[in-house]
Image (tube, rainbow, N blue to C red; front, side, top):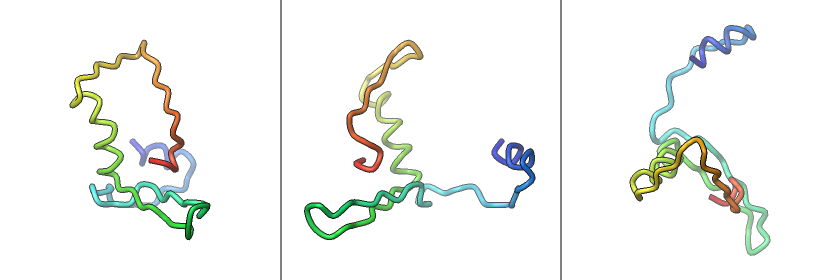
Length: 75
């Protein structure tokens, strides 16, 4: 599916699908309480976070509203 979208804008480059330990996100801290740091989150980190709702017994539907008060850089 991603390949089809990239072909539409004519910049398609063949890439391997990400693995569980592939880096998904680099979160950079400001260093307000110490030295600045970079947190590397993998695809598996993100998947586990999103899958936990069903594991914990939540049954969210499309009619529910989810409010997160923690920015993505703080996960």
